[in-house]
Image (spheres, helix red, strand yellow):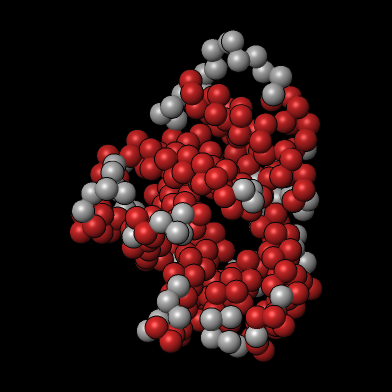
Length: 284
């Protein structure tokens, strides 16, 4: 998320909502460029302030074009990211994450009728449908996984939400089968988190978690700093490996965060790494 984002927002929000907006390929390209501008920003504070007007405009366009898959996916990704990265109020987090998940599920259904009702149909049917997806549907899988995972995260106290984790894991497993390198190895990062949810003392498989985190780091050539942060937070802390924990966090803090498509995420990863490092003595 290569435009001057502040000026772009000012231009966009001057559009009069009274006129009929027709979604064209050029309009969708504009939104994709704005999304890219966000992802490539090295100023999290600017993005935190700038995303809301963009989301207001996006909602207005979706109101008039509720079946536009591209807009739905952009909205799903931005709302889920905004909820988990910048919003602290739990009620607001849940509202944004719920809307993001709705956008993603709607986009999936509109794109492929077999993907309708993924959250309610019997799990064996979900497995069968997901197994039939092809590489061309990876962007849809990726957006759906991100929005659905964020929704589960912010509803972690709701057993009904946590019960849907197996459905999201099925999406990630299919991404791994189709292209494990997708988006800097992010499918492996997701699997590392999933495998870390159950501590070894309760029967969790820590070696699988380690494998997926290390594979994500390797596939991104160490450029995906959040993979290292999650490796430290989810794995090293659960296995009480202080040496690994501190080494990973130091690597993140000392790294150059400027990477095409990852810059904002990397800046946020460095902030989280510093928080984890500051609290390490109390944890270990």
